Amino acid sequence: MPSGFPPFWEGMDRPKVWYQLADEVLQKGSTVLLLGAPDTGKTTLCHFLVEEALKRGLRTAYIDADVGQSVIGPPTTLGMALLEGPQEELSGLEADRLYFIGATSPARHLLPVVVGLRKLLDEAWCRGAEFAIVDTTGLVAGEVGLALKFYKVEALRPKHLIALEGGSEVEHILRPLWGREDLKVHVLLPSPKVVRRDQRRRQDYRLERFRFYFRGASLKEVNLQERALISPASPLRQGGDDLRGRLIGLIDGDGFAVGLGIIEDLHGERASIWTPLEELQGVRFLQVGSLVFSRGQGCL
Ligand SMILES: Nc1ncnc2c1ncn2[C@@H]1O[C@H](COP(=O)(O)OP(=O)(O)OP(=O)(O)O)[C@@H](O)[C@H]1O
Ligand SMILES: [Mg+2]
Image (cartoon, rainbow, N blue to C red; front, side, top):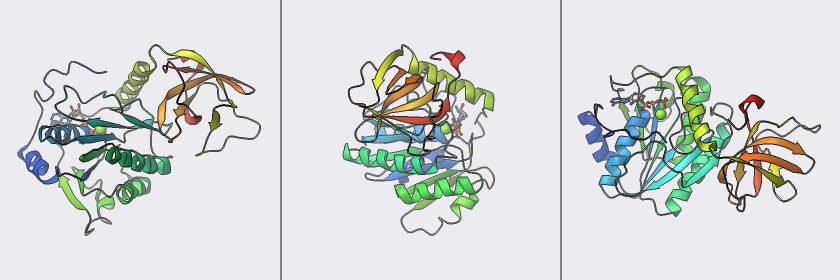
C-alpha cells in the first residue's frame, strides 16, 4: 500500500530516550504494549521499536490493534505480521493472521478486541515469535478507554507498557497499573514533530485502505447451509435484518479471518458477496460486522 516512503526515517525525530527504551524493552520473550491518545506518535514509535528489534535479530510479531487507522490488514480487523530481517516498509504490511472486529472503532466491541488480541498473540508465540509489540487505537478517554486498556493489559500480560502522553490523558489508565509486579510502565512525551490528523483525513485513509483491499473484488455465491452466517456479538433479529451492504468477515475453522466481504444480496440459503478472495475454500463462517457500505458505493 502506501509505498515509496523514501528512507522511512528521513526528517523524523528519534530522540535518545527511544534508544534507551529500546535497550530496555527489546528482550526475547517479552510483549510491549503501546498506549496513548490519538496523534501522540504511537505507530511511529512502534515502527522504530520493530525496526530495532529486527536489527537485533529478534523474530518480531507486530500486532496492530487499530481497527480504524489500520497499518496491517484492512480496517475493521486486528492484524498480526511476523517479521524477520530488515523491512523496507512497515505500513501496509501483509497480515499473517487477521481477527475480525467488523467496526472501525473498538468502543462497542471491547470483548472481541481483547479476545482477538490474545488470540493473535498466542498465535504469534506458536509460530515462533521471539518478541511481540502491540500498537493500539487512541481510544483512551473515560470509562471505555480505561476498560479497554486495563483488560488488554490483563489479557496480554505485557512486560512493558509504553504510554505516550503530553498531559494527563492516560493517568486514569496508568493509576490502577502502577505497582504491578509483572509490568513496567514507561511514560514518554510525544514528539513535537507529531502531525495531527482530523476526522476527514482519518475517513479518507480508511476508505483508501478499503478500496485497496477490495480492488479486483468479484461477486461470489455462498451457500449458507455450508457456511453459516453468524453474528456472535449482536444477534440478528428474528424477522431478518436487511444485511445488504453489510461488511462480513470470512472466518476459518480457527476463528481467524481469511478475508472480508460485503453482502450484495441474501436470498433464502444463498448469499452473494463481494470479496477479493479468489476462492472460499478455508472459509467456514460468514460473520456479520456492523459496518454498512451504501448501495451507491458498489464494491467501493
Ligand atoms: N517522532 C516523530 N518524528 C516525526 N514525525 C512524527 C513522529 N511521531 C509521529 N510523527 C508524525 O505524526 C503523525 C502521527 O503519528 P502516528 O501515526 O505515529 O501517531 P498515532 O498516535 O499512532 O496516531 P493514531 O492515534 O491515529 O494511531 C504521522 O504523520 C507521523 O509521521
Ligand atoms: Mg497509530
